[in-house]
Image (cartoon, rainbow, N blue to C red; front, top):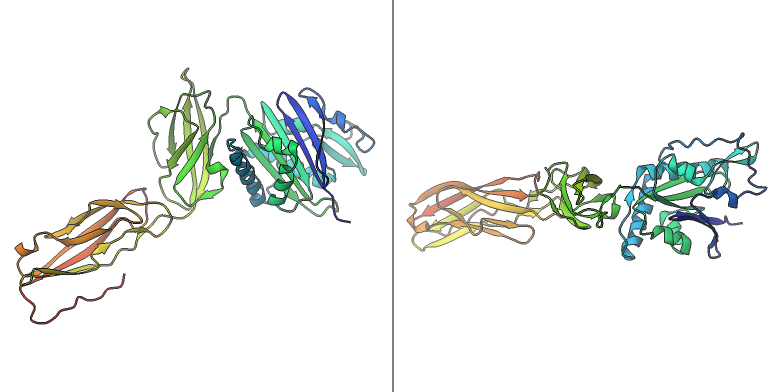
Length: 412
């Protein structure tokens, strides 16, 4: 017989809401309880005898078993919230700890419930209520929980939760600001796969969320959501390679360009100031993959000026700097060194802008060979590999050519 797949939801706002469901059929929502009620009252029956002296509640950290699954659920939650025009939730390690402990505990003691139980001599004994467990990891002003068992992928469990009105309400609850996800897998001849979402918000804690809590980005320009539009009037920002910006009028949605090297985790810190002058700090991190690199430039430039005809022949004289490392736009400047060398532009940006190297007043130059350089320097962002690049320029001036002369062909 195929394994049954179960879902249960619990929410706290001014009251707690517990939902239990089998899939299929459509999940059902059980009766609601107030925030000061004992959630175990709904589950006390012959299958869950209460013996407080026999069971203990000592929640502790459980090692991460599948970080990719847990991160994917957070990203999928925020995708649903963005579609519904709700702000993204910030991933919270403490909430993930609460969820991960419970996913492992349900696996180890072979049960499926929001409350925690110990299996003693083959019987389940109540250990502690859901909020006692969550509070041991995370002190909340409001909280909620979804659990599921039997689903094998983040996409499948999210589809099931979104198909249930109660679970979907937790996922899209505008009062939550933070989210933790716990996943555990093992062969216990029951559901094997256990999933827990723990939602929450804390008093006077206003998270910053980078790129809807994506784990990584290739672009240095990131979007940041700031909670607290009705609380703060100013903010300032920095990352781990910059100093503080000036204070700006507070807004919920901002963008920021990361400075410094790539291929490492980067942290953005925001200070938010209330009208009273009180300042709160929030931060978020994201892995910046890839390293910007200045490229697509020749190894040398050769120019030949014929005084008798007034013509200039050139090789590799049209430059188009590109970012060959990431998709970031590079802003660059051009400088020259050497008699007679000119450029068509002093600055530009990738990927479309070009600069042409030429000669200033070539007719004023005597026959001979002249040397110089053209230097391309990236001005933004900082720490770009290969910048600056100095390209040798050779200018040959002749009075006349008795025979046709071809410049050497150089492959970029």
